[in-house]
Length: 615
Image (cartoon, rainbow, N blue to C red; front, side, top):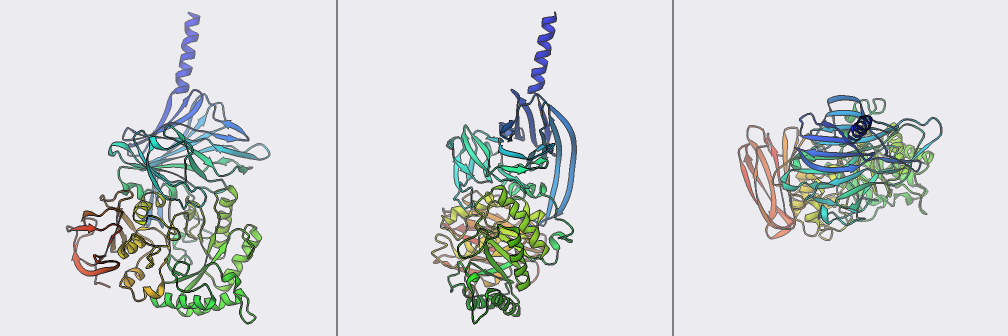
């Protein structure tokens, strides 16, 4: 009898150790199950009872020792969060609605915090502060076992995030393949979509993903993370939805990131010196070098177009003339540009190079920022990071803080994916971390992939729109205009030659284009890598932007997204004889109307709906 009792106790202990704790989304469609399997912490994610992430390992390596051996779970707290906040992403108001739970891991110091939203999940690891000394997080051992039968889209540049996306069956992903998040997933059987990324990466290293075989991706830290404080890892995020519209409108990256501080941003995104807008830029325009005289020309063209910014790229650092140094000339350019109602951004390299010092040293960074402010510059484009190591992520925080104190806006280039910094620091107006017009690509397929992959992480400085056929091969003029509407970037740096834009038929559409949006709807005709159909609203105006992939196709578009009443509409469509031209006509549409499109390879279609008179 004593032997039987001992066996029952042992069996009970084993069952408890292998049982799971499940937390569901407010609408009950998404579940996150945390379990202990053979003394290892695991998790699984399901959507409408279908697997998204099969049971996968969790844990960290801290001070060269794995923190993953456990015997059970203990629910420490649970709450529901339901709030809204101003945002500057695909819409102007974000929703943070989730069930939040914190689990203690028995036999260890590790805790896991989980948030389950109606459109995804997020979790992070927490370890209390050490009694003394520092800790080093050597590895994040989180794995993502993607549901069988899924299709994924990923790119393998984990430094500058400028890779080309490829589509693969998850079973065909070879061991060792790298991926810079987000990795987008189409679940089998038309269940829906998901995307893996991270959020609230501050003084920590960022992660990429590495394929381990058997449908598994593993998180890989870009460097060790050193800390003397409590370890709170960035959030591991899986966005989930039944449609691409749900995926694109997911706010989890912003939801898990801290709100902006009132001291530096008293009115949040509405703080007076934060000014989204379009920008002219000479680098891709092909109209003269980056000289003082030519930058005056660009400011003049920007003023004539009503574009508020001119970005002076690499080369200004070596300006000098008649005893005037570069800073005196920058001040002169700022003064001249102000007369044209244009403000100046300038480019700066992050690393030290033979031609100029970098910004690695906080004292040097502060002095440079002060000189920019004193010269009247309003924004700085900082380039060449090419890493997600802890020191780079710490630089972002320090640079954004210093810039905010001086009322300077920033744009990071040669950078990694956004992870919510632009919520905490609204002076981050955009960042690259994307394969844009500076690099060759199969543009029709690439452009119709980006909205559902890279842009799921946040804004991207793709530098859209060009009239140069060597840059935009395979796309039409209307497709190029649709890029400006579709690709979210509050600081919208245009690749186009502004002198040519002055006389272009697309001029009026471009110069009246908003760079922030109140609402975005991805229409159901959209398909990753094949077709994007976006309806975006700013105030009472709606914009319809269509970009086609490599294959000609037809599509019927229902205008049910419009409000009641008649809309005066300016319609832009491809010229059948030349991809460099477009036809622009005026129409009247209302909510019940439908439009039939016949799109060429790389083609596009744009409508501006105005409830008042046509511009």
